[in-house]
Image (cartoon, rainbow, N blue to C red; front, side, top):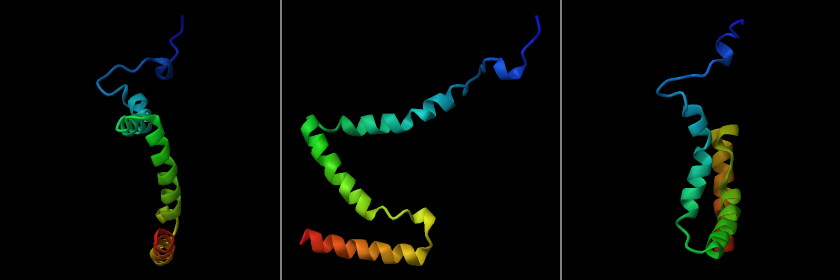
Length: 85
């Protein structure tokens, strides 16, 4: 029988499982945050409000330069202050 090469061999080692474990991190973070709420109703209320606020202030800083981001952030904050008052 021929040997299939390194691609099909199982990796054995101390950190061989890191890729799998790291792919679960966003789910674990979300679950940990959800455990803080005692009732599903309060979690749903918080999530709906948080989504609106996050979308309002999420300016995708990594896609724009500093001046444009500052203008957008100040405009969002001014709009938020009008809505909150």
